[in-house]
Image (tube, rainbow, N blue to C red; front, side):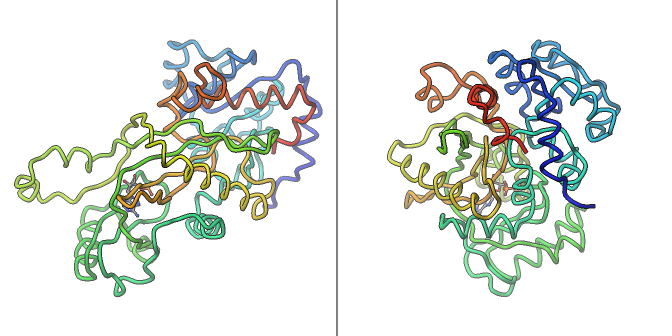
Length: 363
Ligand code: AMP
């Protein structure tokens, strides 16, 4: 199926009453602050929600309209799309939206105007594209090891798809790699297909910082909105077990995200943070026009040489934005009041309408 013609989306947007816009998204992931922020900026909000999952939106009272569906993936159904368009909806994408709607559908059949760049989402999902963007940006990323027999030193082994780190492992030699592959197969955490697609990279020993940026196309500037750190099972549970018992347990750590902590970085690291944001957004403009537009996240590890090493990115609102629903130490600095990512997104839409530039930030 061919990609949606941009003109088709612009025609839908043209038909909207700009005084009566609804901000809509799937009820999951990081939608609470999107709805809350949209309401704070004066928009109506609509949640597309799987039956049984509506409780948080009711209890926190952040949604004006409920579009109830049997399953989240129904958001791409024609009737649901029409309902959204009838409400003059602009969709805010997030991780669950991309997962349930499906990348192919977002690119080919989802005609509802979206905030962001719908073409950049694939660059997060496909590891080769992601590496291309990062390499061309000239930012520090973990070195790639081309084949298991080349393993020297500690490596991290990853498999395709966003699976919350399930099946990832650390190895120090080719033999250990082979042993752990067998163990992961026995646990049914990986399949034969995954082994062929295994990605091996330098293990970066350091602390985890997931940096949430907002790229304003209207201002042509990157803003630092907040930073979180991941709370992952089983690795974060394992470190609470005394070393001698860790050996007895014989557990291989896994990296399944269960939550996030808000963090701040040493102030002396912030020049690197802005440099990464500037470089990646500049490169993206050329590779995937119009480039980043709105929220994105660079997942990093900071080693004891104080290098910020980027190992992954989200090309849309990342789940860690939930750590600053009432603003972060950084987002506060811009506006002198608590500012969530969702509210910043809604502000951009509001500014786009006021400056008559909405079509520049919608795809
Ligand atoms: P990911 O699925 O790529 O977000 O990775 C899941 C987790 O694995 C991360 O949160 C890190 O804790 C860890 N991790 C990923 N890549 C590396 C690496 N190159 N070196 C060390 N730890 C890593």
